Image 1 (cartoon, helix red, strand yellow):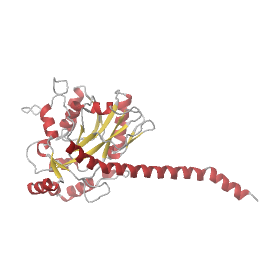
Image 2: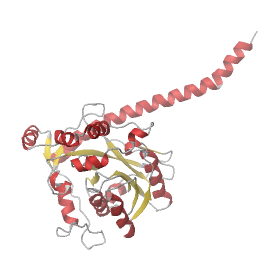
Image 3: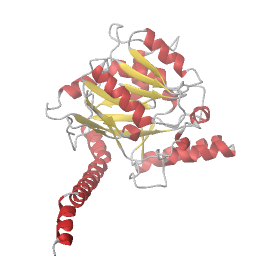
Length: 346
């Protein structure tokens, strides 16, 4: 797994432990100027022999470059078979078996597999860890073209290890001459916990995205930066939080669901007295991921269907780009020579 983190102390320990129990063998991590204890957690996993740590002190949010570097290192230096490109607030949940089982089922001719984002919404803050509080899941995420909300449907990618792979910003796609995508199949849910507390949001502010002219900030990042500048981070968080009335309405109309899977999984690998997560060499500690029921499958298929539409649009755009590139090459080459011949012909 590749992991880029900056000030994620409230989530990164659980995130790494979860994936090591879900089928990930090794983590290649980059810490970008963390000041809240995140780097110390990463260092602890490095000392345990399950994580390679890169320290990146630049402050201009070159996410695609940094993740691409990690993904290539996984292939060239660490013997990876498959690479999961995860954010610190994501938990890759296989629909059945383990992550290894999912990837073992992929036919050899395919090298890219997509996961489907599923957003978990904030609740009023208590002293409990985020996974104890955040058990409300959004069932109808917005289309990616909708600019009025931060909760969009989207895909994340895993791929066969490849020294030539390139990861796009946001880890939403991967490309390589050697990797063909397996389309219209999303065997992994990416459980997403982006807004967890006002303190977490304060720590994420000023993440460098506005200092990189090549990076397009998300709506979430722009709104958060504005909230920090105006001193309204708590109001920003409370506006997104689900109170009891909103929860009751959402459960009634099907737009929200109670989902305790991550909470229960972390309970299974966490010492409730010390709060520490077990490494996967502890006997019986590995997680199990049972096959969902028919109703859950149907609901998931509905959410993932929009990703197939997005994929079709992206493929069409790429074909147009390729056609324009070929046309430009012709205009510079054969057609240009023909024009020159015509002009010289008396």
